[in-house]
Image (cartoon, rainbow, N blue to C red):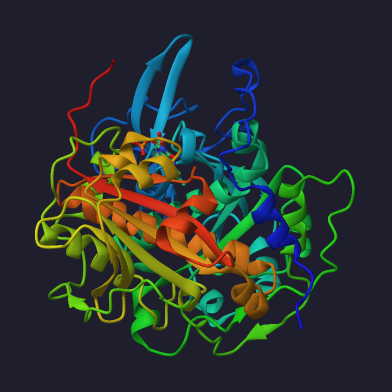
Length: 507
Ligand SMILES: Cc1cc2nc3c(=O)[nH]c(=O)nc-3n(C[C@H](O)[C@H](O)[C@H](O)COP(=O)(O)O)c2cc1C
């Protein structure tokens, strides 16, 4: 029996870009919200002296007195490097009246809706409380004092990761930073952005002897109240315990099952924006674990050219270069030359994107079994141009239909040359209805966060190999479905373009 569309399905349908619709007017530049918080604090903790280089891009942080490192616990130095490599300022562009800060993680429209908070563990040596990561000064700013750690753990279903953790990183989305420009569709981009940040966090933590064991499943209401979040403005999206490697090596699952949100009436009340409706309807209010969720059936491949899967070669455990150097030099490519990218490079990028966040005691992805990965090959010697499906488990590609689709994918990406001039475009999609049946409307968060995490792993591998890369979250949804021959039930989540980077030009 067909059921009425859930709020997540209505949100997805209502935020599609369509060829026959006009785009909303350009945003008022004067009204752009600040991309970071600026809490007033007499005694912030300066994190600059712990960076692995001499000069912080914005100069020394303004602090009252020189920091006495001996008074601070060793955790601070490690947190400094983790936060910097996750979301710190890695580029400064002078603009009229100030400067624009670029970060370690990419962000749709460079609007940086994610905000990072730190909750140190009770034995960390830092005063208990909630601290904001002041990205522009690279400081930790105490916001509230109190036993936050235990409360956050309790409202996150007290998974074993909390018992072992030295500190928690909380990721929120500040809605207006992105909705100012992207309106309700901002929610999709905020989740993708947070996924990118989480991807960085996982690798930055690893470099400091921690593993992140993130959970995007928690009691939203309880945590919003605890953190004094105004839920219309800011939503908690991920709670990420930093667990010492030794605890991970000791074995045992650190995370419990993924949780689902309850079925809702599916009604969006008059006057409520779609953005607020999806955030509300995907809330978790009680413990509803999901054990062994089933992977949805792959849609019928009537058009498939029935060729055997093509193996892409050996798999590798990680990046060739150092994560720190790669993330510091990372920038999204602004234009491709239209030249080819070697097949081996494409294979390594796909490998890193999909295998590095593998299951085990620490799980980065929440609903990977729901994701379908597609590849549009435009300019890769040794691979017939066409639409493929990528099979992460076997690291193989399956030709679905051959052809030169550079015009079609360029059109799908709102005419962006980044797509038509790419060598290949990776597309993540999911059967939204099946995912919602498994996880409730919370699926909408999981799917976009997962696609963002994979997007960041794809990005870093591409930068490491000298291949140009950029995410694309603005596309004509139904046109991508048609190009990939996917049924309407499939939601297109994210596009990652890969190609030969054109030299950067200011003009
Ligand atoms: C979720 C997401 C969506 C993006 N969408 C686009 C896009 O549609 N077109 C584009 O040119 N760049 C896109 N980008 C790249 C951003 O413009 C870029 O990350 C931002 O300008 C910051 O620059 P950086 O990545 O070089 O630090 C996207 C990035 C993310 C994370």
